Image (tube, rainbow over all chains, first blue to last red):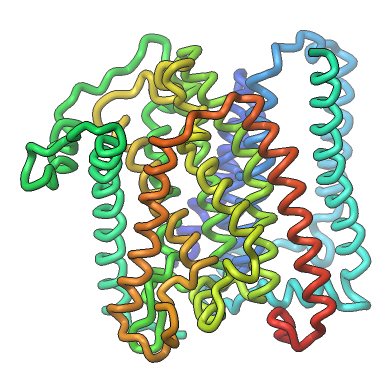
Length: 176
Length: 338
């Protein structure tokens, strides 16, 4: 019962905040509403017993990406070109395609939603998930290739950030 | 691991009390120590040696008028102080203060304690950004903007420096990280990570010399310019609790936590361990104050320079060296648990 209440509370938070993020006129409000959505999803992960995933979600999406979005928003002047019909049409087309894909796949196989009353109380019987996730990443025939691929990309991004920071400062020094 | 509910209740009560007393005590220590550094007296009238000053401050904050600036967003403006203070309080739950009866003295002994503190601790910046934005004041907005830029620049180095420590220990549970340092503290195996963590811990808590979000000569008070009374006090409390947590994390990750030097953790009485942990935390708390009243503040471009050009390459290098060392020392090394 308690887990059902918690599920409804946080799923509701995620959905309501997502709607605010979509329909609010102020982009800063939308970004702050996204905070509620991401935290709500993190809590759903927790209730499914995925502690590592929940914390990673908070650390990366809430602590990193959303801060970056807010930083970008505060530095960006309003762009009237966003309202041109071609842009709106493109946005609708991409969203529609995504929604169509999701809706056609939702009822099949792994996507099938569980009925509400069967919701198990996973949070209290969960075992730690960090170790199995780590082992699955490093096993030869599971996710090793994807893991190594992603880590190389991220490392390249980090080295690139350092490189850009160094190069820009050198140009500044010469200009001074 | 089943912990008796009574023990959990006592730990929560004592932990909350300790957290609040440490944060309140820190405000007094900060004022007295800054006065000592500047050859003043500081607050010494309320109670013996001014010890009751935090209580007097609290009474003052509660009775002060709460102002709402014209044009400010009322909901977000009131939400921001809570959003700054609550994450800081939540992170304290994962700090182990010693071992009693073979079990760690901690509110929540999580398998992913390090990740939990990093994740929840990173929420604190939203209070600052939100407060800065909702105040409808250009100085506040600039303060919030700076906080977000600083967070993005320094969080990366902080996490990367910790990854090296986790690789050496092979664990993310904070009390087992303490146990792993029984013979040798991490500061000796990971000196570079310790240095990077030391610098980023000042930046993470928005403390001098990284206090650009509230830098008074340029921004009046930065994000909290428009706040008064208890709402301002909540921002203040959040900052001090975050300092306590970061100082405690430093002690746990690099200085053996409750480990008394030259004594095995299993042989140490629990109170001695807890005292050692408190002493180490206290040292880094005093260091916060010491640095604040000794060093000048950075310029903003210097802050970005330090974050991206010095700390990030240093922590990447440290991680690479640590990885190579662990790979060469083979599966019998400290990280080779499997």
